[in-house]
Length: 514
Ligand code: AHR
Image 1 (cartoon, helix red, strand yellow):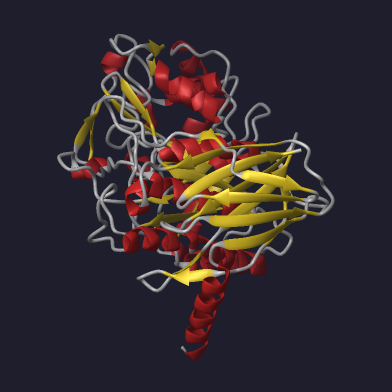
Image 2: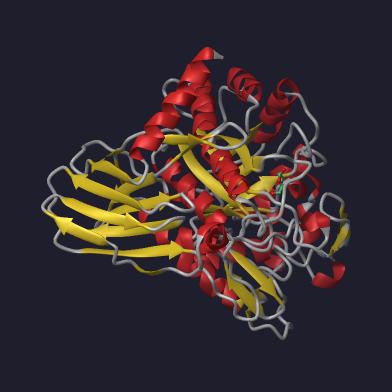
């Protein structure tokens, strides 16, 4: 207790003394640095609310412009984002999904009640072909989440065969449904949240189930599966421990889910919040760093040679649904607060790649912290979308270590959050991403490079409209309301080996330095 108090006081004093300016050493000459896996910029799409229907899929006969049933505007926006991997069909939906219902002639596909998500009738018009063709069209690696909770070993085994085998009855069935060549499918999740909506299992029971299901997920005709075990929810370190103890082979990744909300019973509005509530959400979001570290430490004890990766395959903000919408559809708006969460989380992930090999934000469209919102024929690109686009320069780039003061403040719920967040990587240029969470303080950041004397610097900034907390509440909406969009950034000065950057309150900047 005393230690915690001392840490908090030290953090407060340090924070106060450095508030407003910071020096950041950027070690672009560091050698043997890891590559930032592009999969850290992954996405998640579930049969939930209007994510799939209205979001991705409108059907070929829709008056909404579409490419073979996929919304054209969404396809274009997603292409620009360079999404590396997409997890589907859930979430909780995955453990009630029977894939055979989603193949064959549309008129013959059974209808089910989506009991997890608002009791909506699911007509199965978007199934395996529609998903895998979408991924193929956009060059996205598919991540199939298999049904363990209410499915069977045989059902999952046949799904893998249907998708990836060249010959046999499943392949013939696939060909009869219009697809002769198998798809390439890398990621297969064996269940989702098996401790909860995925079957209410204990970690001991699930470990045994995992082994049964995983062994029959076969590699056909050169397709090599990367098998993912259903992992813990945020602070459930025991789940990770038991899984690591009991599942020693036939596993490539262990998942983890972490959502940023403070109070699950009163999550609060996505667009109307106080400064304290904003900072609390940021603090909760960055707490992921400690959570990752603890899960990684446990994994390291059982797997020191690092054969098993950690995949954060669901993360993001979770607020109350927009007034007047189905509470089971989890449709929330997205403000500059979400952009700050995205930027500060991605800065953490960029620096955490020793075991963290994938992160899938929840979700791609119309659900939770979405990239995109749709209504009829309208589309909105959210502040989170813009952060993901500004940050896609880090995908598969070499991580560049940054050294900076660890000045933190304490949020109302007693969590620490940093007064500055930075990450960097090297590809065609050196890219530095910075986020200033303060609602009122401009931050001056002096980037000092090992030896680079920048001759060319350019950048983009994302910032809300207006001042103070009102700027953080800024968002984009239908009928052409655009309050948050990236703009060219000129707030820097170069001198020798340094670039002095002036970050306005609640802003995100990505710089390209050559
Ligand atoms: O993303 C919404 C839900 O959150 C997912 O279906 C589930 O896995 C998690 O609890």
